[in-house]
Length: 304
Image (cartoon, rainbow, N blue to C red; front, side, top):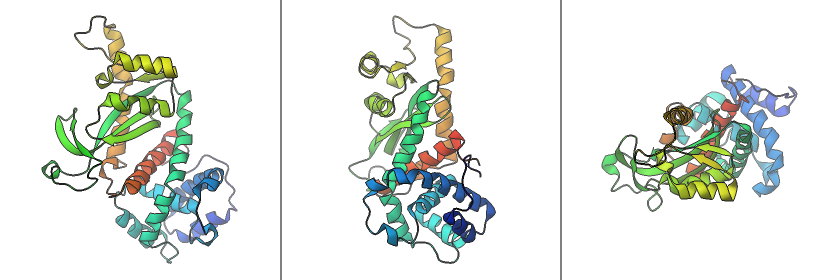
């Protein structure tokens, strides 16, 4: 994996990383993440409000780079990932114990979120954006009435594409025509797409947005255009009086396929539906890490 940027080879942390890592492929991957993150952190160090920063065993950039590498490789378990890191990357013991590493990752979730948000702003120059949602199931259907994980936050909802009920969350996501994630929000599974649409599309506004039939609402379209100058197009219903041409419907359906591709990659490669965190902060840092590393790959800042 390579980074398309001018990085000085005499960086001391680069020498440390090269010394620590035995695998050349993992070394290049983690170094590329480290160089990118270390270039972003100085802009927000004053907002992290962390004490004894000069006494830490590993720099913040190293912790974030390790976290991103785990998401890139598809690790959903923090225990398994830490075991892999200490057994293959930091074999000489120069790494944090698992509990401290997890706490550092959660403490840096604002930095991960900020970096992803800054990358997402590049999508405002893309041709258009697509909005859709996907289910994040937290347990099997047989256990959804007695599960205690995220009780009071998650709930039971219907996955329309599979026509199945599930317990968990719903990820509402906006991606550009090039597949770059922009705005997103996580809600309970029962939340309707129209309810979260305004929040998703106004985080990083794009002037042209497409959606499916779940977003059909003349009031929503009017509000988005008048308040935010956002144009939002959806397919029409069969019983609708004034329907657009069939060619327009086919074009709209074809352009919306990009978000289905993004969802497929996030599920199959990055295992976004298998996050095993039991706390909101842990779930948040895992989700933002997945979206950040996917954005890096999509923009070509990191090459696999």
